[in-house]
Image 1: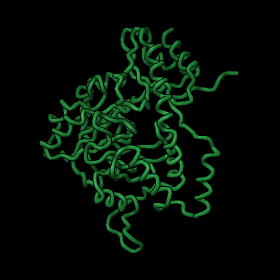
Image 2: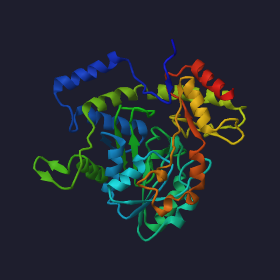
Image 3: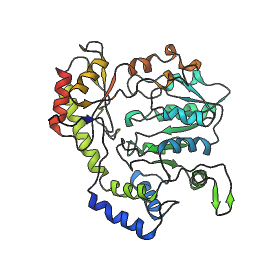
Image 4: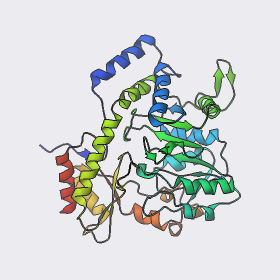
Length: 368
């Protein structure tokens, strides 16, 4: 019998018996949503764990992105990266905002600050960078540009749960940071997300916007949306927090093993790996360089044939999709680094339950 396929990532699932008491409490108090007790506990626990002052929970990260743009009243044009999941730019379109794509740094794969100023126009109101694969953007350079041109900065921090720089949480940068707790993330509530807020007033506005604009039973102050996280997801998040450090530690072990096994493979470049705590090890991206004997897609097919389901993440570029490719900033000659990376990227499986023997088998297929 063939072994089951090994996917890029899988959620870390605590023992079922540990979740049952949470479920029983939900049944007993009969509060399923609308900021119930687990929702409130989870927000407080996240603030403490992440080292931030205010956080607003959401049903998913995309709704959080859409609402973050609404909360800051962003309009016109927003400078962003073509190298991300489509939700980053879709959130702009849902708000009637024009994305302006800027190329990425060839080492970090994050938005290249040296390319931002040339893309600013009188219609530019904000910058929307992504901490790609959990590696921090050049937050200092981006903020300096934003300050000069009076622009807002919203970080898509979907990959950056628990990521820190030398002064603390990376989530404290910008006007807002948006997290995703999707099932494929390092920290998951199956579906979920959050906005990290700088102050109580901003959080209050966001809390109104995610609940249809309601302030009380009869008062609506904004054209809000239904973005609330359920009590079920909040309870799962509380339980996941108990294990997150253990899960990240195991991911780090897998990361080190991959690097050891692939270090001498010609044509394979492992990204990241500075040795500093700049990543939560949510992904293990490699670049398939020209001196590797197979193309990226041929290696993708080879691994898949062996039951290892790697992912070309991110491919295609956002700017290549039909709703974006007509934009002047989406031209391939405007995005040479992003276009090259998208053709060479593979993300290898990494998750806490992944066994060393499987990592060794994946590396052996690549090395062969």
